[in-house]
Image (cartoon, rainbow, N blue to C red; front, side, top):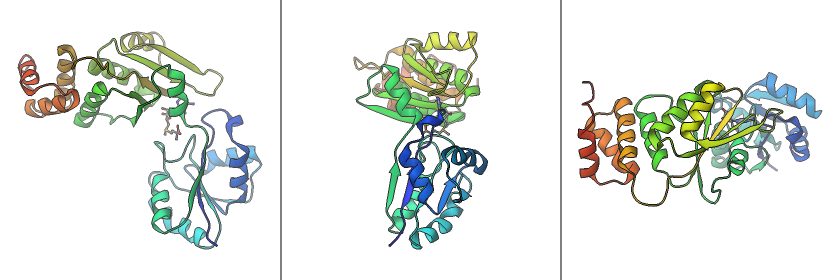
Length: 280
Ligand code: SAM
């Protein structure tokens, strides 16, 4: 008899969303890996779970927690993995422990539950048949510029996470990359008292955030790029500017934008020549 590694989803704001099966699993395991023992301790006391060992497995310590976890599984007891909110492994720790358990041959399962990305997607009103989860964009530089260019040409609905103090900047950058007319849904404080889903264009979203600075946690859901025709000149120019501002040289920016938009090299090259040389 070996134990199982169980990823347990926890509420993203409303404690009522902790499922009865999640409570049952948390009560029955020998070890609960969490990001923050104080935070998870409060959830456990709310759920009436006591006497289970808690250990930190956050982005810095998840790898070093592996031996402990595998030892418990070898002893025939279950290990639960929770994070501060939502589904472990989604922009949160969890994946490394899953990989280690699979590699060592232990069963891995999950108690499904809240995930901000799914809730925001289904509330956005956009196409849910095909979508892309981008998580958090890189914060700056070439990586960010490249990713924004990819997002701009993505046909599927795109779901992004963002910290409240960076939402306005990300909405502005998305507007520069995709054009101000692209539609976006900004889902904030999901499952909480002040839950709100704001819908409009990226241009309107920037103005809205100017009037009402972001508060609480946000998921941004971006409508996919229109299917008809290749990117227009403005979108290509915006993507070139983003790549250049992110530190790419002209050749690199052209390559990035060609890959992201599918536009022909000659066209992207000619448009790049209308922009100031990088560093000038
Ligand atoms: N594992 C979590 C999940 O399953 O959704 C995500 C953890 S990630 C570190 C935190 C991000 O998720 C936040 O910055 C925000 O973008 C999003 N998020 C989490 N809770 C949210 C909520 N109640 N309302 C809106 N966004 C939320």
